[in-house]
Structure formats: C-alpha cells, structure tokens
Figure 1 (tube, rainbow, N blue to C red):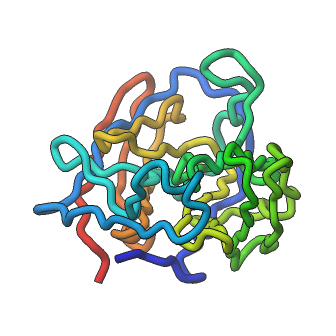
Figure 2 (figure 1 turned 30 degrees about the vertical axis):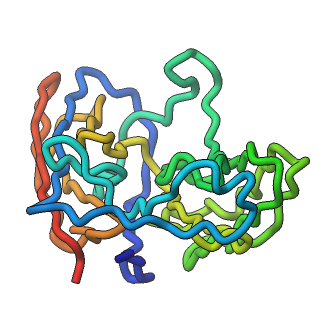
Figure 3 (figure 1 turned 120 degrees about the horizontal axis):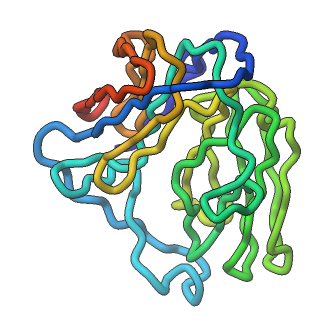
Length: 245
C-alpha cells in the first residue's frame, strides 16, 4: 500500500537567495484523490499495549477526507531562486519550533517540512522507549533510542543539511510507526489539510513550476504544473492523484 521514494526523486533545487518580497501573490488549490478511496487499513499493535493499544491505529499513507480531499500531500515550488525567508515565529507569536511528537505510538504530525540547516526535535509523550530511525539517502542517516524519561531530544542538524523530499522516519521498537520529513531551502511549500486544501503565500510575481509529493500517490516532479503568479493576485492550481503503480 505504501509508496517509498527513490533517490532519483530528490529534487535539485536552485540556489536560494532571501530578498524582501513586496506585493507577493498567492497560490491556492485542492489536492484530491481520484475515484473511490480504499478503506484505511487497521494496523496491528504488537507491543506496549498499555500505551500503544489505547486507540486503534490506521495506515496513514492515504487519508481521504470530505470531497475526496487528500491529506498530507506536500505542494511546493520547484524552481524558485529568490524570495522571502522562513518565518521566525508561529501563529501564536512564539519562536518557530520544528517538532514531531511520539504520542500514542504514532508520529504527530505524520508529515513535516523543515528548513535546510534547521534543528528537528523529537518529543516523547508516551513515557516508553521509542527509537528514532531516519532513512536518508541525501543527508546524514540517524538511528538512536529515546528513553521514555527523555521527553525532548533535539536531533543533529546534519540530518537536514541538503534539500530532501522526502525522508522517512520510523521506530524500530514499534514497527507500525511511520512518518515523513521533507527538507526545503525555501518557505514556498504547504502540507494539505484534511480537506486537501493548501495555500502558498507571499510568492514573488513570476512563473513557477509547482510540484507535489504524496506518500501513496508519488510525485509529479518530472512533469510539474506551470503557474503564473501576478503581483498581489491569487492563482488556483488543483491536483487529482491516484495510487502509484
């Protein structure tokens, strides 16, 4: 059921320069699943039932919501070479933190994007041992246990020195756990919500290649969409995906 990217699918982003963007435009859209979505597969919890078995677990490689909206697809600009910097604060005004929580023996969020050179912190809310295993073909792989008493574990920045789309994260202790990380040199990306919606804002006027990646449906990196963004304008680019063969 699951899609695993090959090394050839890591994009060669152009060098990126941070500039002041004025009168930027917006790209919005919906990523949908084509046809009737298969039923989500229930995962077998085989260990630490007192913690992991409190809730049922399902394969999150294909989460289809209302109107066939596809959750957890990454939509991004493939060829942008200059634009805004990454945000320094979140929606609440707090310093940006890039974190994945191991909660209920699942990775939350299932898909996360971090900037090149940024530090990722793994949280452990379960109070049991997990194992952080990053399967990278571009950056430095990582494999280390996180004891339950160690609730926060900042990872080395060597895991995010180069752009990578995507990077799989797993837990060797609980084999059903899986998630994805993407490493970007620029902030022009979005991860779709439960309705399949995305929004990429403050885009400098111009024409760009728009790519997507989705765990079960693959990527259009070799045949991206072309979108022209007008100053202060909004352009819509939808995608309809099907399972990768």
